[in-house]
Image 1 (cartoon, rainbow, N blue to C red):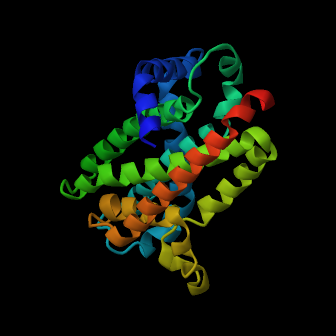
Image 2: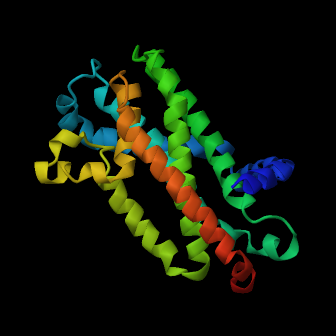
Length: 264
């Protein structure tokens, strides 16, 4: 693991320039450019708010605002958007960069880190916009915000570890990409993002904690929507799970590294 971090540090300039190129390429021919990083998640928030706010706003005790549902939704979407952006892009990153891998000699392990970097930039912009909106709504508790870096770090670790495992497997099992689009849709509805956990049947409530994303999203809800302290014990479980999955992801990548070139 130490050698891996040393390798990433040696290639830090390549990673930074690739993040810059990735952002430039993604939005080079787009009229609105980087604004699309904001438009997609905000459009989802607007759609769900228009459809569900009248039904669920009354079921959000503890949030003293007429915009309670929108605040709850944005808080959860921040975590979900960061997680899915990293996982979805890591899933196909080795295939997407297959031409560069064949032509340029560089460590392929830098590719998920480049994905992580571009996702963090998009997330940071969205977070700033959300915090400005919360401040305008007089719904900002500065002390609670101290938890945001910890929540963000845990989300990044979990998403990157899952993304690395899936990205490596997807090189050899291409059906995985199609399957994950379905799994992520199921996971979205199995995570209390657009609804509070207490409105679902008790039999389902008992299953929700089995989903690591439940604890991450709940942390964002507690900090941003309810302005309280997240469940530290649950976050520690997700943290150690992320460490475990990271080790699995690195071992899997090293085992598959030599065969990747042939398959790509």
